[in-house]
Image 1 (spheres, helix red, strand yellow):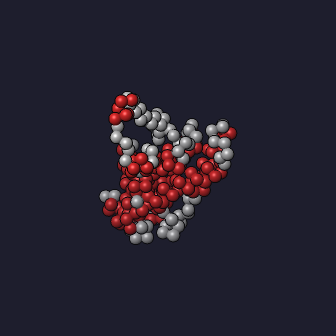
Image 2 (cartoon, one colour):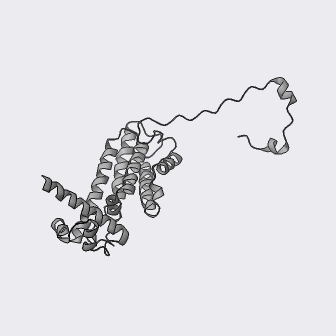
Image 3 (cartoon, helix red, strand yellow):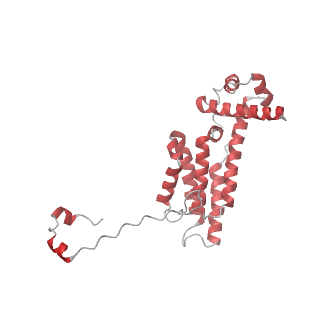
Length: 234
């Protein structure tokens, strides 16, 4: 059992090392010797787990897609309407991409830079998943009147895919507060539940009522200046 545990740890260390190398250098420029050194393992240990760099590249991609599938399954089971459920999916996905180097590297692999890697077609898969969610919402009466499930699913897919690609250049786009704010701006009435915490949206802070003004105070008050009189009411 200890030997098996060490083998699992070694395999994971090699996958993470490869992910770091792929992000820094690209797949073609990443050598097996460099990857094994990053993992502090021998070249023989690397070839014990992976027969070639292609096999190692596929392992990085497969581990990334497995993490995405777990999030997709959570979305499919989510009780919230589609906008809130997809927002939580986006927060979970982008947070994982930001913090997990294997997921980040795996989702950036493309056939052009990693021969043998097929496009995962995540955008189409997410659209179909979101469409199933919005269609179920309409059946359950959760979709606002006049909303088309297909158009709603297209918007949600565009948001998630767009944020994923924007974050590849600037990871600030993957921040939870940024995602939540974008959802609130674009879908103000549909994603009101607080993200991920199950507490619902915080109630807006009411403005204090103005203090009553006495007749004598009103009579003695100076007339408003032209600039203040013409200013729009706040």
